[in-house]
Length: 93
Image (cartoon, rainbow, N blue to C red; front, side, top):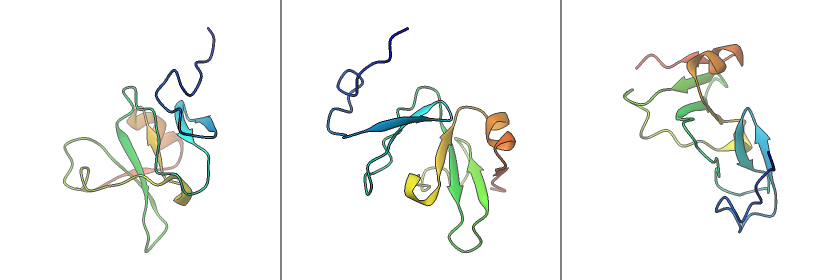
């Protein structure tokens, strides 16, 4: 299977991207999270205060307000199992 170009997947404005944990992420500094989310809706967030890695699933209280910024080490996951194996814990609410 051929790898699609950035233009083909609607990311033509990006200079570069990389596959990270099965999700295409922008790799240019300062770019917003440009994850190509194809069923990968679990948000891996890094706590500003503690540095703890916490994941949020749709329906949880803080899910909608959580913004993923790859420059902080944050990322998207496709399953809770994938998040746990990567060392993240589920948010409590």
